[in-house]
Amino acid sequence: MARSLPGWKAAACVVSISPALLGPRFTQLQITLKRDGVGEGNTGPNQYFIYVLDGAGTIDLAQKRHRLEPGSFVYLPPGSDLQLKNSQAASLQLLVFQKRYLALRGVAAPEPLLSHEREIRGEPDRRNEAVTMQRLLPEAPAFDLAIHRVTYAPGALIPAVECHGTERGLALICGQGICRLAEEFYPVQTGDAIWLGAGCPYWFAPLGRVPATWIGCHEAHRDPM
Picture 1 (tube, rainbow, N blue to C red):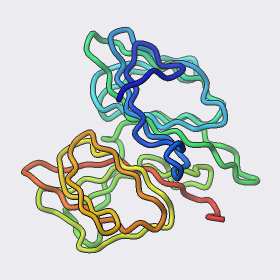
Picture 2: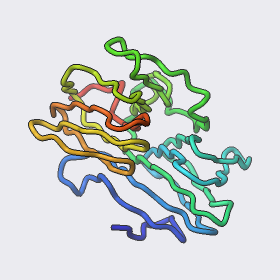
Picture 3: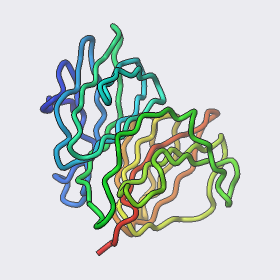
Picture 4: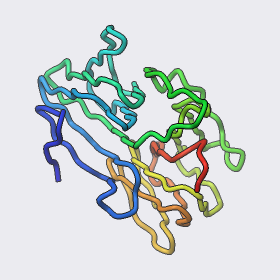
């Protein structure tokens, strides 16, 4: 159910995952900015990752205005000002991850980052080259968050059940499939959100004639203790 959240105006906000679920340590949102909708404020102690699902908008970074389109993404470190606007009559649809930043001694926090998925090279999975992964954030100690965009070609799957040591949040942004969580199997489709607790067995298989793509986040480069 959509709700209002501080800083988001003329917006429908869906909280898919949050610490209120008594487990997750991050928040995953789907936000629809209506005509003249804005997101504004400051990230405070948190970091934001914002991915454009559909529509067009603008964001102000380093005193410069940048255009956003489907596939654009923005990383905002803690203490960053947010000024994001819908620039058209149609809705602007966003996927947003928010997480408290964990500083690493002797390493400065990252700078804001703006890019597009087409600028990121896809890496074929060694177990099935029809499954490709794009690392949307740099693999660097300054980042305590990893964001991956994974695409399964029609009929492709990885023939193994995975079990990760960190919790994960997933958003299926294209296609449909079957997802295994622990011992249960669930049908999933575009727009669905999935939370994996640390150690939860996980498996995914696409269905249909179009690729299935999800974007996921998990903690990285930090001591699990």
